Length: 73
Image 1: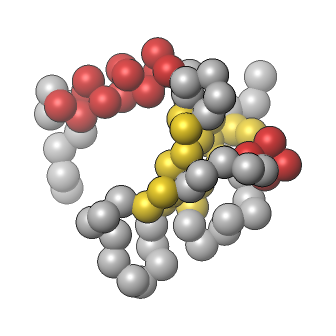
Image 2: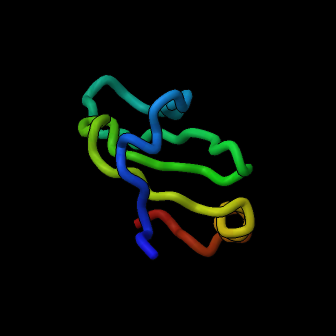
């Protein structure tokens, strides 16, 4: 199974950038999927592929962020 969905599968999704994003265009955008998962894409390539995560995978990622598993470099 692919770890991403094609842009045709993301038609109609509402993409959101972080309020911390600047105006330089180097951002990621996130969208909620109908099944509760999340899709993430590069804001510079809105017609490109999007990484797709199940709701369980997304919850594990968020828990890891809160636990400090991804320190800033």
